[in-house]
Image (cartoon, rainbow, N blue to C red; front, side):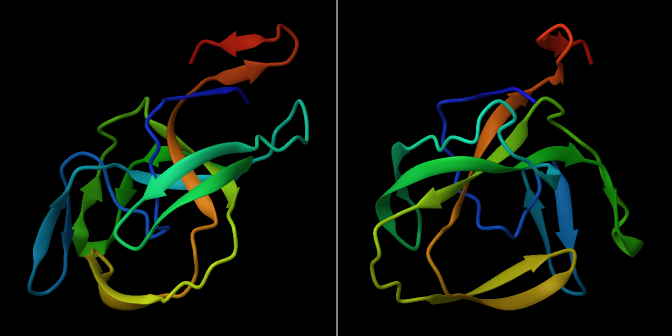
Length: 154
């Protein structure tokens, strides 16, 4: 599987949300997200077992730090999803996929954080207990044909 990643780096806290007019609901609140739902699959680099070793600077609400991007570990496809009385969400951006890479960073103390999330599964309180280990990047995807060593039309 061959991917071409965009230059935009997107760190994802693996509470995967939604792109494109999906409404998360519970008994008392609803919120509009602007992202698709994604279904993720394990992945590995087919042509080599090498580590990328690219250094990137990540800055989010918990931390700002340089990390090394290592090997790909997941590929995530946008997905249509139905959930009980929530109804359904439909893919708004069918060409936007995520490729998630393992990251490595220098050891440092991480203070941890407690966050409240709200989505169609309800309100949950999460303890964020560790540094990021995964970086997910918006990516183009094609189905690779090893016999022709080219992308198949989808």
